[in-house]
Image (cartoon, rainbow, N blue to C red; front, side, top):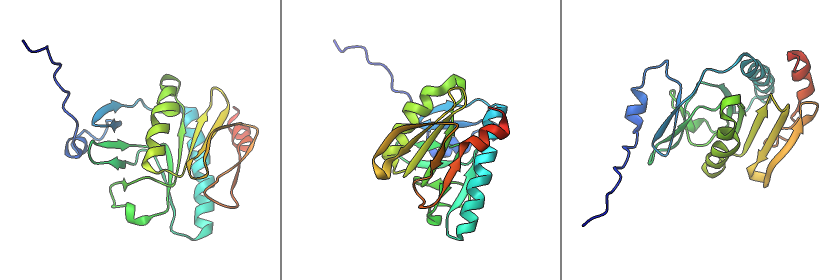
Length: 188
């Protein structure tokens, strides 16, 4: 007699993902879909300030890098499908951009922690971003008032800074983010 086998869940394909209604915000890890809640006001405010600072810096460099804010898809793997929507990213290889998404790892990613899914940013995304080849990953936690820097390329993992810190963006030689200015501006 054969043991009872659990049926395998069907893994989502890129075509199925692309056919989701546009209003659905979702990410897919190893073919399994995870729906995302709408971001909070503080979440969006932090992203706007960081995005503005980073975009001004990147434009001033006159290089090939580009800054993107969510929702913008990043295809980390075709098989099994892994597609994410980082809160903020910098992509320096324009060959990864096809008009619809970034195909491959961005150079720099920022995720702002939402109260209901902290483990997602600190554990799941850390794992996927590291092994996909992201060079640097920041986790901004408004509740704890910390920024956790993971500079995979330089071997630095889980280095925590307070919102009072000036934090180096390690993929650049001369970029510091004075997080206290953002915190003061937003009263956090």
